[in-house]
Image (cartoon, rainbow, N blue to C red; front, side, top):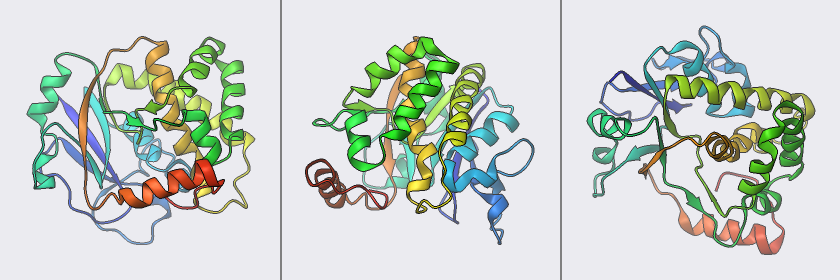
Length: 257
């Protein structure tokens, strides 16, 4: 199989040695240095939107410029994995393992992140600005009204496939990205990020994480889940404290948790 998994990164980092992986520097059009990775600013690209679209600038670039049969997206600190062990870099999904998944389905995702006591919409309300989701729903009502009921249903779930991590067959990715970026570009016209703090302005990447399951369920797309390995300390103590402070203390996020 011809599989290419893009590894979104904004800095020099340890990268998987498997040739299936392609390090992609996001926001490369805005960078003032070069550390040798493929940039997201060649061909058809939205590299200059990286401060707002996050890793989606790599996804867009891959969608428009990479011709592989299967295209995936991972992060320099978060990779697909289907094994457990002590040495994290040795646990990263191999091409042989990816092929076994893709022989069965056209889409591979990381396992869901669970919020348990929060729905997706209430979690977004407590941590960011719920208006982003309200505007997204209105755009959906105009562009693709058949998705609105599924959007409402998914927003009440307490878990989702987050991180914008995926491996998809090209024709599936094409349909998904056409739908996703159509919504996000419309949302971009409705939200003024000019005076937003940098953390808040990354809202288009956040909203997109919540849209993946909407598209998968609406189109009855079969997928398989695998695990993922976090490179470095995930700082669960701070994550849990921030989560509870947002839900019960009204303290919205002001940095990544």
